[in-house]
Length: 543
Ligand code: SF4
Image (tube, rainbow, N blue to C red; front, side, top):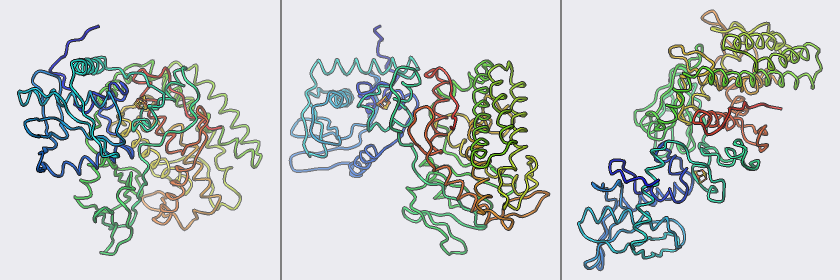
């Protein structure tokens, strides 16, 4: 099908050549607005910033202008021409690339796009340009032949077709994916495998964010920036100092304040800040402007109106939750055999099986309620003899006893994690498939945590109690409830972080990766199901 160029549908010059390298990469960057970086991309950006810090450069034999923003009236092209050089009576574009001198048709197409923009802007022919390769400090001359110009226009046409189609192109899954900065979002091998057309992936892809969570629980603390470091101060004394580049998330419990300069920096860098109350859990979060992935959000909104799809997703998530509860009880039963644990595990197995046949969400809620009752009836038996607390039943808002206080605090941390996943994937955390929409409730984040409640939070709670990490002196009674005090929250948070960073074997891909990353993967797979790339959502099941 020949599609005419639509001059209104502008394509950034920097993205056109992506179509030749990988159409999926082009889709993510241009349609979804992905800006994920890795070391290569970062290096390229730093070099570009350094170059552009000098707007022009004059030497005896030539003159350079940098960072020229141009838009065509006739072609669907817009963007920045890196460097325009004037020498004698010639004017030509120069494109900077990392690496060694090489022949590369994609680089030629990108340069040709710049030449087309310049020709229109200057009203003269540009017969050639150069690609400069930074590692070898060499430049290669490129002639804008008729054949290259035709290839460039065909590539622009292809780019417009991809945008108009609005569906994510297939993953490549070949050597081009290695080193691709979008690999953690794209999951090429995992997607192909789940589509039934690829080998089992053997190597986990690094997370997009590898940073740390900064936890601030000191009443009256003040957070500010000093050069490239974040300082937490109290009464002008520095309580903590961390490099800004290492932070992915900030959790503020209680009354800490933050400078405007730091707030702006967090917003610019997409670092999320979560506010917690010691007694009410998560209060809210500071979040950068909405992600640019409109097609995904539209797919999520459509799915929320599709009752059959909502039910299918909810069934899978609740089945995952119940199965993981069962596995958790059986693990304890293996270490210390107890017939009541075995019996509860048997009930959970039956209930997990029933999720497959329910006809509506109300029945599913009934099954989930029965499973939670069976599980929490025996939860107290997971606590060792030396633990000074009893657990009779789950209660909350406010929790009435220490074990419930730990569970409630842990679940609120986990929901915060799921909100962060939704936002980094581009999903709306308030629009869920199982949890109903209630004003101010992050329903999708609550859906996503179902598979992880037991294996992360309940595991941290039992470990903290059985190992004596948390003791009676770590709680306080107030507002008719029982809550962790400052020292208790610090200890619990440290154990929780340890669990999130602990590696687990992925049940489908069999490689090992941290629990935190498994949650991100679930969010990404859910997005792929909503966009029709994967046929069904699979829960994360521990063995
Ligand atoms: S990981 Fe591979 S398929 Fe995915 S965007 Fe990058 S190059 Fe394309």
